[in-house]
Image (cartoon, rainbow over all chains, first blue to last red):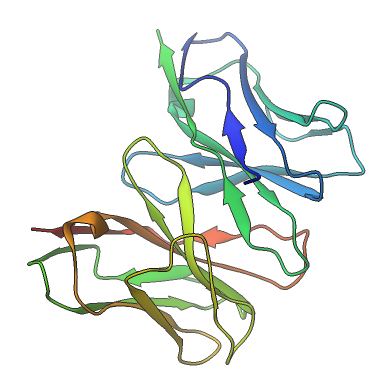
Length: 112
Length: 113
């Protein structure tokens, strides 16, 4: 069936560098996408979202890019910090009232 | 403002035992969800409730039942626990509409032995 997936299971980043986390989706009906951050032992925490009528959205140190042509979503984290170490999930919403479908997640490890 | 509160945080069950996971939200959200998360995997939807009085199956509903007790509370019941139900369970809620984020609780770590 249709699914949301991630390209890389683990991403090692040096502190201060930029991180890029990728996500592929296959449900062309999805019109809203969210990136969540999950720290160990905690529930997912909202980072940033984007609607399908947008290509790019920026937050504080984070940018989400959406390429509908190739069904690809990415999260860019600028100047990665140790506190950014976590699992990052992309999620898509494709129905009228909003249940989320999650990808498998990418573990980001920030090294000094 | 507590957000989404789940109880208990940890639970160990024997195979065949039953239990109910409790979830409450104080954000006046219409929609509530139960997800499970297995090691190295994303969250999979078990059941959801679009509004008070309605519930629907998600991706992995077998072995579970739910009750939307009122607008605030959405419980998940395991009638006869199995080792395959060992997982971390997350409750979430969201306002109505497609462009709204879901807020998650801290999770319940369940082990079935």
